[in-house]
Length: 297
Length: 332
Image 1 (tube, chains in turn blue, purple):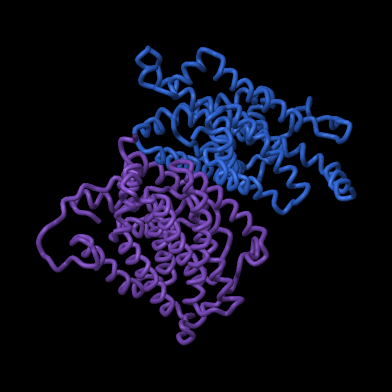
Image 2 (tube, one colour; image 1 turned 180 degrees about the vertical axis):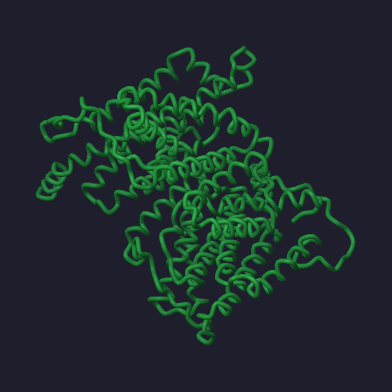
């Protein structure tokens, strides 16, 4: 079977690409997770998600450059800061739209994304700023037996998996999560039981935004920190969300990692298609299962 | 159900009197506005730079085509740049490589929009609302990546020095004034075509689908077919607009297929007034003029556009023409 051997050989050569695909998948998973959490509660597709991802990376950079605060504290501080910004956005603007058509939420957050991106471009220009990975993760690449993988990328995948599982646990297994799921089904009834639903909505938005910022900090040492880093990523994440459907938390995480992997494989076997493969998969899923792989019709 | 639909038409109390001013399916106020528009088209090039006016008209047609979808079917497409941009590429290629005359090149652009609209619409109408917007956006991003890779689009360089050619093989279009009349005619034809569609029985069914899709379906209308046809029509006109723009400037580039362009046409329509006849053209005029004067301020244009989005959504949902219509108690 020379063809098969050839394919296997190609795969072996391309294995690093496949594993790097998992790194992209980690970002898809974290971002689509945040979108799904926000959409479930607010019925708003947060177009500013990419901009908030970018803000997460920039806040980490600013903490380092202006305050000398390193990567590990930034991993906690940056999501908190950007999450607080999310609280302000929700309180002042987004909360005015809940009674309107859902599409207005999309338009508003699109406008917010333009403003945020423009402001950062004004301040920092379009070329990227460097952000070094923390010392503990900067050393020699890990030998996986079949390939060498930079420690930092391994950490990104692990951190994304842990974060996704933690989010899933909070939503599915805690009392707070039970309130949240109940309010998603019927907000008026939950409010009648004495739960402060508007505050829960605000905090849900903040949590989703913080997830995006967390992903942004993770991304800072890999990509150069620049104002456009979120906008094209978020469009791919939209396709991921359409493919997975926003019905289930674990579903969006699995879809995210899975598509990152597929993208990595495409880079090995047919590099020309690697930028479009996710959109092609979206088209196929729409034909076969319009509600998405994990979606409820 | 949402309490306020995306495109609630402004309250109407149709002005009475002066019969005879109603024409082409317009009511009296619309007829007056249309006459003003005609006057502007005729007089405009003698006061304003014709190339600027041509750009404005291309975007106005683009926005009108987009409005057909959002304003009358209630579908928010966030990927209209793919029709506009690809229409531009095809028209430029037809004029430059195949040596088509300008009218044929522009029609080629429109045909490209139609084919692309049929394919993407066929996929996108499987979902509604927010998903529809995300799907069209994602499909447009795919087209953008394809344009980046395909050889005929010239990648980062685009297709440059496209000749305007001779209209019907006879009239040289390289003087700006000659080209202007062609562009004005294309805009008018597109504008009136859209208006005709809106007032046709087909358009009435579209409005019915927007207002209450299950009911329209229960009355026996195949909503999907109607939506798809409206989508193709909108995409075709967007392709025509893109093709015209490519010939006016002699260049087709990636800018016109980029997601930001999809956002811009949404902004023009929203600012002018969703679901109004004249709103998209007014919105396009405002945005194009603003870009013209603020071009040197770089990222500020993006910031201002974002701010207009936010203001429109929060406090100004009827748009410029919608507010004027409400104030005058007419339908525009």
